[in-house]
Image 1 (cartoon, rainbow, N blue to C red):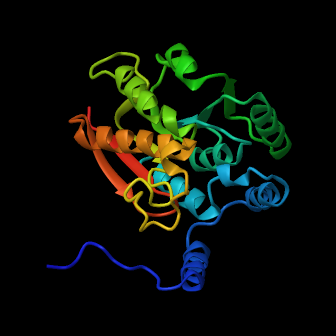
Image 2 (tube, rainbow, N blue to C red; image 1 turned 90 degrees about the horizontal axis):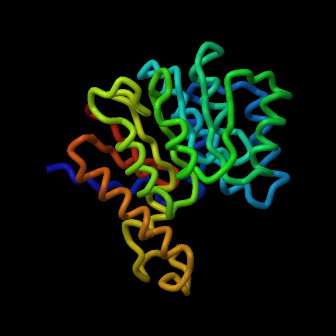
Length: 247
């Protein structure tokens, strides 16, 4: 039987070169998006909140594969990922973002306006409070992307399923739609938070990181055990949980 676990790359340098090669072969992103990504990375100390260019390519590919035209994003940061979704769905599509931080939302709206994006909107506030207010759209969303506070993931999943009941006339996510959740391996800590993991913080058990990992484990388990979902946890980037809503 072929082993399921594969050692991808023996050195960090090789891993970086292979990733760069794969990115160069994959679908192209507009130059202004690449420039904005580089600018965020260069100018902001919190740029780790942003998805990578390579993950952006994967998400655009995913959206186009299922013919997505409506995307809901929970956690906008400064607007880069929403630009990727907008690029994926085209000018006739729609991207709705939920962002807790007003400064992030303002930065996002500024770059969207400068770059000519007219199909993205953002709601500022706690996503858990905003979701019920937008839970009955005229058309359901095709993809919901979660990349926000990690401790909120289980609650977001519960709300998404609650507002996407089978047979409902107005529902949040369509049958066959995708829930994509980012950072669902958390530097491998979700799978292994023992001392064998070099990324484990010294104060892991008492730190916020420990709470985040516990919440992500709860989220992953919920997607795996819910009969309404079919899930694939992809061990790339920082872990990408893809769940298809069956009904």
